[in-house]
Length: 478
Image (cartoon, rainbow, N blue to C red):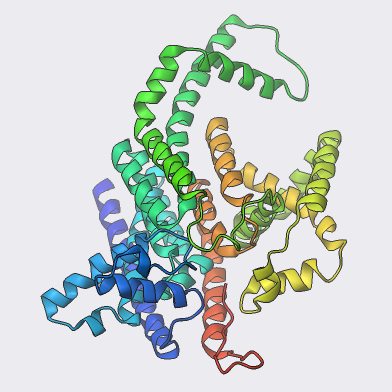
């Protein structure tokens, strides 16, 4: 029966992957016909990749407007160049816009497979129905709108996702040297991916801390001590445990032996920052780091919107309101702190205010700019979204949650520009780690993603416009 179920799951997976790739190829064809010239950030990425394709790798050939490392271009050359040798294609064909964009479509296939493998590794396999749930979850995440859209343009999203997911998978299988190497590849696509390499190290540390914490709790249970009472009693116990754990040379040396490949990668990153004079290469004027705390609130809202079948229900709202009433002083303090952070640390990047091709422009203009008070009125929504996300991760250990939220904070808060594609990786990692939702909710989520994708592609391909004093065709996108 087990072998039969595994075989059936293999058929379902093959069918889902084949259908998704077929639809993607049809969409890719539509994109290629509509966009014969580079669009948006492609005006920097595509010429740079073509220079690499022609063998011009010198720094004098580097476009100073590009802010990421050349991982995408190097890998693209490694993929498309052999085609000229095998099939005898000319460089004009091999290094064409269509061929370079197709590299991301290949990445999307790899991402589909990695998402499935991660779900098999992360999620327990003790129910027959989990087979369908895993396939549906894989399919849903593979067509996650803000990720899926960029599979058809020459952006770094698909490759960045591929190497980060691959690093995470290798980490879960205990192959930490390979994981760190893949983390380096992810860093070469986007510098902030170093945070997710650290997350992999944090995953190892969280596992060891959880084991030690369970042993500690068992000892305390046997000793039957006087329980510590108070609203922060659990926090104090965990803090005391962490301090005691970190004081042990044996514990620290064990963690060092397990995580040294990630530590080496972190040292390389620090060396890069020191030599480069910052994390951004190229044009730094538009990518200045700041403490943009509301970015965390925007991510919570983004996650609530795209995971509403799992996070939003009458029971959830009722449970949240009961908790708020029960711990009203704590929630009052959290609300005051959140309002202060929104008041003092809200930033509007010049791109957000000026570029009307992105959906974030309209979200900001019609929600946040229309009435000043709106950004404060949304604070209860942010708090509910944050609580709902934390509640959905309660099956994970307290230490895993701590590592995840630290990484989430580090990767979102320093970004001044509000752009939905910066939320893709943390969202996918979050979504992989919540318990497998019921099939009905997954179908609802999949249907909603399909509708959002259809509308996004339809608007992008058909609802074009022009700026005053410009003949270029402009399109709406994420």
